[in-house]
Amino acid sequence: MAEIQKLEALEILDSRGNPTLAVTVTLSNGLKATSKIPSGASTGQREAVELRDGEKTRYGGKGVLKACAYVEGEIQSAVRGMDPQEQKALDQRLCSLDGTPNKSRLGANAILGVSLAVAQAAALDRRIPLYAHLATDSNYLLPTPMLNVLNGGRHADNSVDFQEFMIAPVGAPSFRDGLRAAVETFHSLKSVLQLKTYSTAVGDEGGFAPELESNEEAIELILESIQKAGYKPGKDIAVMLDPAASEFFEDGVYVFRKSDQSRKTSAEMIELWREWLEEYPEIWSLEDGIGEEDRSGWKQLTRELGDKIQLVGDDNFVTNPELFRQGIQDGIANAILIKLNQIGTVSETLECIAVAREHGYGAVISHRSGETDDTSIADLAVATGVGQIKTGSASRGERVAKYNRLLAIERELGAKARYAGSNIYAKWKGAQKS
Ligand code: PGA
Ligand code: ZN
Image 1: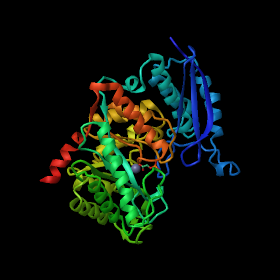
Image 2 (image 1 turned 180 degrees about the vertical axis):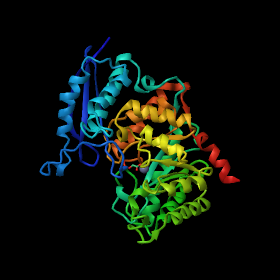
Image 3 (image 1 turned 90 degrees about the vertical axis):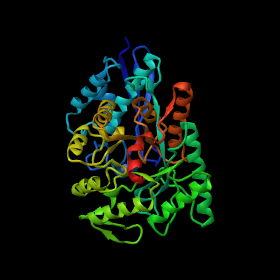
Image 4 (image 1 turned 45 degrees about the horizontal axis):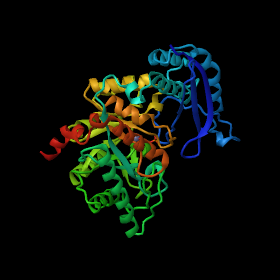
């Protein structure tokens, strides 16, 4: 049996040019695997803590040398000799070694680096792909991709308040065909923007980031581009939103600082979503339509729209099984966003997905706005069969790397490859029509 023999951590750069960790584990049989850790910008308040050096003269305080030192020091000593196949035991040891509820001592970036690298090494040791290693059965499902083709909010310096406008090829027969439809729409959107002499420069997640007249215009442009690409909005391709409302919730009101400076109460914000869904039935999913601090607003939103559309909780659940269970009890959302680095271990991430399944909640596997070329989340999506992934637009290498990995997995699975398509959304689509 192979054991964990060595851990190495290197301070590398993420897609925004900020330092992050690459963690390499070496097993006693010589096998090696490396994880690279992402980093968010619109982070939830209760996310596990990303350890940064805070030394202003290096990378503006964002260095991760302390986290790297913990990996090679304390963590290595604590996990050396452990069985890489025992992910849960490893993750438990990492959590207890850290000793804080939010991984603030050793850093969730250091801890996830080790947790994920060991998962990858364990797969190598079994001579199977990561998706097969993480799966509990072989009912693999290729996820419907949600491509963030228009970026606003904290991910772009433009006039759009809402962070993410995504397209999802729900009507395609396979992942490959779906990805093509979405990518063709992305290119069509570029032409639509060019015709209007809008900028086609891209934001952090590879979507366009034009200066628009209003948030609504973003939807209109996307619908036009879907049609121009030869697809039917709401049938072939659905629209999905992540306004990341916590980012513009200030002292109890929603402030549209980037567009028209208008302000909305919680009730008015919910009313805006109700109106948008009526006007744009092509919208099938809404993530963080309400801010994490506005808990009563979230409950109200779920009561009013929870049977009509997928409502994804990101900032309020932060991939934390405990917070998620509490949210479910409180009647908040009907789906969860899954980001490994929000919680910091592979096991706790899998636990969240299991809780979602147990309670009939949807789950969307997600990248962060600061990414690397690590493609583990593609494998995680296929392994767990949640049926949804958001990992950026059809540009920027760190985004397409995940889609390319999914193409490779689909090919490898051959006839066994099933595609999620529109199935996940069927319960809400019915409600929209009635
Ligand atoms: P982040 O944004 O990675 O910047 O936190 C992603 C999201 O809000 O879903
Ligand atoms: Zn989000």
